[in-house]
Image (cartoon, rainbow, N blue to C red):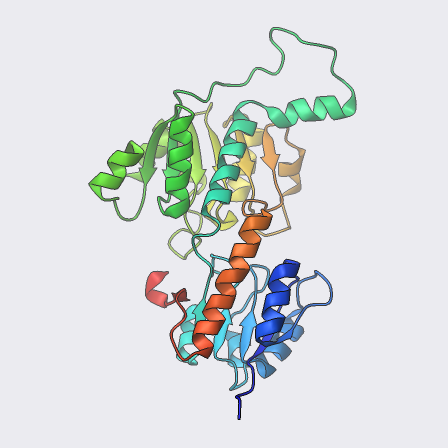
Amino acid sequence: MSKQPLSVVVTRRLPEVVEKRLTELFHVTLRADDTPMTRSELGEAMKTADILVPTVTDEIDAALIGQAGDRLKLIANYGAGVDHIDVMTARQRGILVSNTPGVLTEDTADMTMALILAVTRRMSEGMAQMQKGDWQGWAPTALLGGRVSGRRLGILGMGRIGQAVARRAAAFGMQVHYHNRRRLRPEIEESLGATYWESLDQMVARMDVMSINCPHTPSTFHLMNARRLKLMKPDAVIVNTSRGEVIDENALTRMLRAGELQGAGLDVYEHGTAINPRLRELTNVVLLPHMGSATLEGRVEMGEKVIINIKTFEDGHRPPDQVVPSML
């Protein structure tokens, strides 16, 4: 007698090819529309499912995990970041957590470079001028930005994505510097041509561009706070494709409004979709709706990782991308 297929609940619409494969392999409940589940819907799903497949928009805290049914054994996150999941409480309840690392690296690094270029070369201001029909023709002093080549780039967080950003920046002729909780091995550092700074304060004060590429953890919350932002040079720019909580958004907004920073490129925000309205008004800021990993190829690969994690678990083994508290 064959065993019953695992009951899997998916909280958001995924690419069609991923949903089709999940349906072929497991007993899957798919989302009818592409809206986030309410808290009560999440709670109901966690009471009945063997496996939950959430995304970054689902806040799975200790209270929700406490309501989970005995059947729930795996939270197979569709995404690399797990700061929206209380991994410790899940572990205490005997619920494994997995993620999809690695597949978003190149896409997010591409978007980081796009933001660096867009801010330093004032692309959004040029686009706005064209869309309004205000362009009067070429002028020698119009929309003068800055040359990227030769600029010092400070990367905060030198994991997979930080290193991918470093490779791209070097190709653009930038000088690569970084701060990380652990220094890279000498051979990796040398291959990237990257200079390590033990002191984040000292690095921040000397960079032309700061790129935020570290995860959101209790120790990185507001790592770029008001005091540290004020260390930046007034002609410097900052970009963030990681997590919004790493930057004090209100302090950043005040400095940009006061002309104490040249500009910013943001793909993530401290309070999710509740972006500071004063930030939206600024012309020296490029704002994107969390598009860093938004490629079809990346989304499909994320789905493939989720499926491998679930299938491996179903076969009685530890998911290859299991997340444990010591990793956070």
